[in-house]
Length: 265
Figure 1 (cartoon, rainbow, N blue to C red):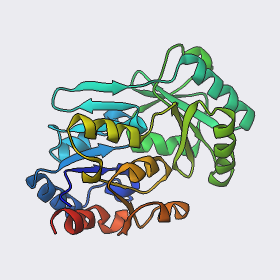
Figure 2 (figure 1 turned 60 degrees about the horizontal axis):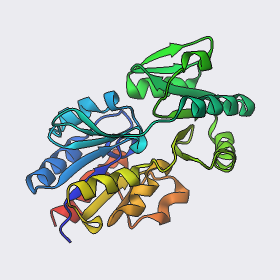
Figure 3 (figure 1 turned 90 degrees about the horizontal axis):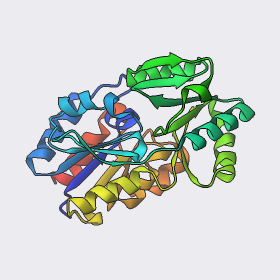
Figure 4 (figure 1 turned 180 degrees about the vertical axis):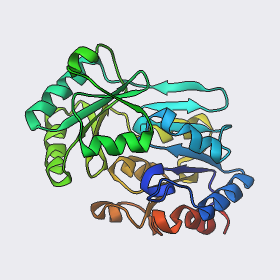
């Protein structure tokens, strides 16, 4: 099979634990580009937290999927070609739910991370994204408009219980774990798989010509959609058998292995 699109999750997949792209991954991605493969970054990150990586990899003539599929950007024109938001009412309902379940909650407005509280888990998101953290006295008063997504944050074993409950309580939302301590909520039907499908059809690329690489629950829909769904070895254990292939971990250049085995071979 000649693959034409390579879709890459970023954190814990393309990036090592220091949030860097290894020389090995960078070299193999350059070779994939030389073969004409469309390389798409697909992350739960906000768009501004992805741009420098796309620029660094020479992908500014491509497309980018951010916010777990809620936004697709044409990097060549800097045009948002797809965007789906949560309503203000949905965000307020998620806030109320977070208070009931005693979790932290964040959303994104005006290029900032918005929360009422501080926590070690929110600090991780600030570190990953590089966005300013605005701590507000009243979350619902601050959020007076639509926003793209919310994240509920708490200790992983408890948050796993919350995930099951939130899916049952708000089945009209798209809910997934992006990290063990990040439970993400977006508009119904929004996920990485749906956005990869949208882009593939826009670019006249067949489903079987797509490779997707990830490590976590928010990657599952694109792993299932792709002709070749690949997990890196640090994949969450309960997902390991839900893809086609497992390659080396994010710290051992798993993305480079994908290119070498399935694109250059």
